[in-house]
Image (cartoon, rainbow, N blue to C red; front, side, top):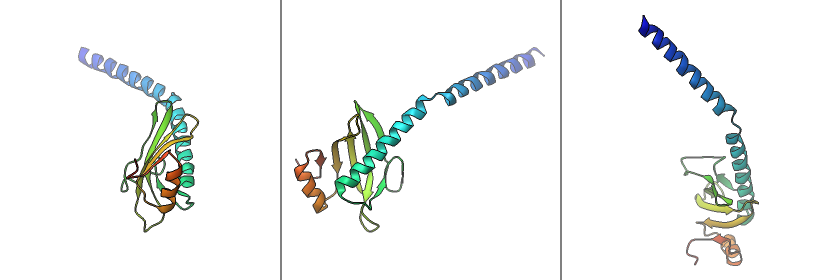
Length: 137
């Protein structure tokens, strides 16, 4: 009989503890605020990528539009700014190009590493030190 009461008390205590911790975790706004910031960063990176590649019809795989068949994409804090990685292509027949973009705290481009040999992009990279293409030093 003592074991039944002890088990019941223990089960109720553990249940209440799990419920209290779950409630705190669910109602904590820090996770939602961080997610909203990450979404803003990714949206800004999409606009910058479209502007740099001079293409309105890019297909972009990024943390908001994940496609594991293409590759993994990340957004994370890096110092005072952000880093976003992903892939893009210009059309169905073109290959996927990986990119890594660094943004400052105001979401302005600080560096962009792209493995793309598009002539317009090569020309832009020649005049913009923030853009790094393969084979450049």
